[in-house]
Amino acid sequence: MNQRALPLAGVKVVELGQLLAGPFAGTLLAYFGAEVIKVEPPGGDPIRGWRTLDDTGTSFWWRSLGRNKRSVTLDLKSDAGRELAARLIDDSDVLIENFRPGTLENWGLGPERFKESNPGLIYTRISGYGQDGPYADKPGYASVCEGIGGLRYVNGFPGERPVRPNLSLGDTVAGLHAALGIALALLERHSSQQGQVVDVALFESVFNLLEAVIPEFDGAGEIRQPAGSTVTGIVPTNTYRCADGKYVIIGGNGDSIFKRLMTTAERPDLAEDPRLAKNPGRVENEAEIDGAIEAWCATLPSPEVLAKLEANRVPCGPIYSAADMMADPHFQARGLFQQVEINGAPLKIPAIMPRLGGTPGGTRWPGGDAGGDTESVARGELGLSEEEFQRLKAQGVFGA
Image (tube, rainbow, N blue to C red; front, side, top):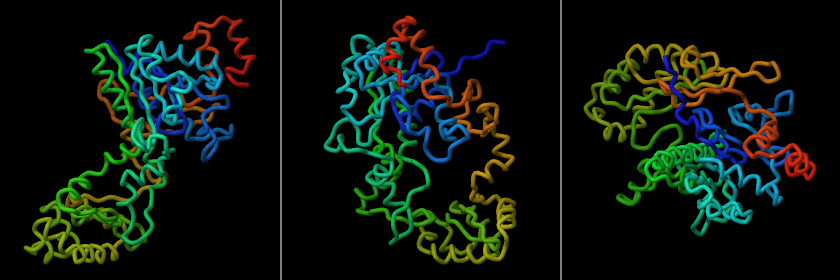
């Protein structure tokens, strides 16, 4: 039986990005078959040392983010380092970079440098505010861009300090947008044979998540406000505390679902109340509805609340920690954890979605040492002789 190739098999990618947005885009491409060479500064990507570290002093995060990539260390502040990077890019289909706009132009590695030597190059740029406009030169970390992009404004409780999830959401969302842009550009290249610049901004990627916020303001002058654990204009959907102190999420905003929910919550009067038959009426009476659900949940432990609701086909669920997810049989059945080995010790890292039925992606190896593939790439892709490699190494072009 013929085995189908992964969707991005044969696509060569050079990743110049550091930290999260650019590298996450590279991880997505590598997972689905692309050949990704990660060019790191001497000493490696700083994210290797962030958050919880393993016994080698490397972050557990890196084992996931660096998977399926070959690592080359190059001093891009040196002429020789930049020339070697240019040679790698000339032989690639995709470049991913997330430096501040203008940095690669200053290094002689901007898009114009490759227009003749590699006209099919998909030149992917990720920055806080995009490559042009009055804010282009501002430093743009995810935390800041989540604010200006509108996400933080609607997140949290009314009258309180805006909050963030304990994640670098703006970076990850930007990485997803970059991977989508690359896939679209590669598809278009089949017909035109030409590459193009993919310009991804963190604040725009967050802005892309805002649903109806803009048309509601422009059409009705309404500025959506933070709504705590609810969603404005959709009732009921909330988080409720149960008798065991645990919280559950209940979404009963469909008309028939609402009836089943209130019947389960022992409030048949509200299930049949004509005021609450449709969502607009439920929105007007949100406090009454939420109060009834909250009172019912407070009488039962969370497993019993969930069991009763599930028996009546009401969407509901617990709030999981990492430990809960790892122990859940559905997560296991869906293959959401992939095991790798780090110096002989097992480590589980998350699978990457989407799941493709015919050509699923996978983890071929975890993130390795900084510069672990420098010599093989120098001798292979760059075609350096032993003498050339040793000379450049002695000059510090490949790091210490």
